Length: 417
Ligand code: GAL
Image (cartoon, rainbow, N blue to C red; front, top):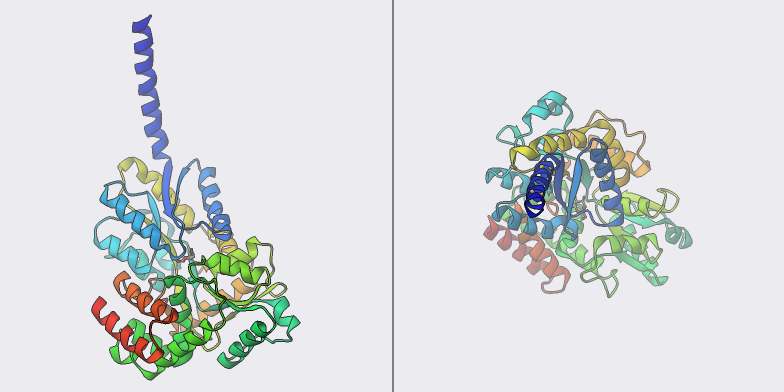
């Protein structure tokens, strides 16, 4: 009997291993940081899309807005020689991983599906390395948005602010009425995300380009940059005492729940409003940070495809194809708060904020004011981005006055290159 049992066990084990290998080929392991309500709802669209194609999803969420934590975990996984199949990634991080030779090649599916003709040049600059497609762009977000609780504005008789001074006055009125003027999560990436548009408001797209694209020390330490830091001090005066360390989606919830009047945040915040059943124009307003109108500081979420064993590549290619399908692009971006990464899909199904975002994206691309978000890794690689984070968050927490902060910013950026 023992012999029979042993041989049965061996055969069973062999069958499991074989089937396991077969299953492995129809499964993707995905590392991402989409853990808030709105983000998870959007991600489910992709999971269900793949499962409908028979592709299993091994979820590897790493909480932490902006993806700092996720990138740390990724480094450990790659160092250990076991990269995930696909990783949510932003801008220059994709190019850095590609330069290390860690990413796969999507040229075959990209050519078969004509990606080059429909993905904006600005996104291709991050999705291709050395002329080869290495990641699939999911969307286009932008950071220079304000999200406002409409009931508070109506209650206080406040019109949508159209200038910086009107915005400040509206935050003051909300604070005087007992509301939090500005909902904010005290994390470096969130302070830097606000700083994107505050810099444009203080010195125009010219200052943003010279400071954050050219890394010009004179621009980084200019009187206009001092004004930008002074404006950050104004914003600091409207946040509540418990802002430090708060996650971005909990700040969005303060506006959703009528505790706070405004939040300056990328349009992933809209995903939280939609997930809470709120309606643009009825429950909340979306508008560009006063002073940044006409400019779009963008960041595109992409799934970078890593070099994995041959057996995983078919599923990886299918995931890339699913991401770029027009139907998925609409279904996902409707929920996520972003706009499609393809230019050939209609925005008819998007809500008013989404359609405004699409129109402004196209106009900014035409006008040369579609600028990579410095905060979201679309202006320079991580070393420079983190140097900006360090100075902006130190200033926001009172370590520097505005004039010193501008000097520190120029020094930190110079040292990071
Ligand atoms: C951004 C990302 C968005 C959203 C946000 C908050 O970097 O592009 O999709 O995840 O972080 O976590």
